[in-house]
View (cartoon, rainbow, N blue to C red):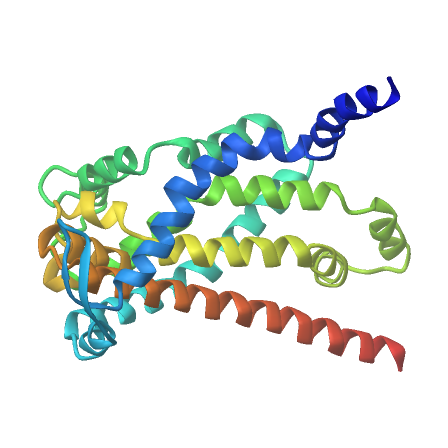
Length: 310
């Protein structure tokens, strides 16, 4: 009888031991089939030099796709545009979001209303936002030029001037993610112990000194998190360019980003292996920037420890 009970208890013990994995199994299956497998497949496809896509047969492997990318002027332009956009949009997004979060964290009227207003762009479809912006920036009947006309400013060709592409994308990137970053910063600000500020006021510290020596150090984890996610978001810029510029990469290809280049190679040129290679380069760039950010934060922490230990 004891042996029978022990035999029956084995499945029960198995279920209890791996219960969590059984709960996760459906989600892990979906992630594996629709995310992990395509990522691995696209990575391998970057090394296909001779293959039959329909039959899924590979005849030759190599680094030709990566060498072709290095010699492609469009890919070089896409990298330059993406880096320029990231260097401007990412820091400006963090600074603007922090400024609005500090203002909303103070005692102002209708704070909840402003929080909702700032968060609306984040939950709105990027396609819908880009369509509205394309209408606003239209040279002939756009809202922006209509407002400028009141002040005697001539019509500006916002969407046909190559020099205006980067500023437009920067403003759009900052505005689109403002609400999300403000909410995250607000959560960090409200988690700071108010006794730090009270002690600083008793010592006669001014508002800027309290912000620089209390708020910023306490928000370092939040700033780091938003820095990483913001850089990744800017690197993935595509929808706004595709919609605002009517399925073109901007005037004189001034809005050509790496993601747009990948899209163009895949869907327009049917160069699947080249698109896969470009995707891997994009992944390597994002990974390198993320590791650099981790390194900078770690180095700053080490220097701060040495400074305080003296």
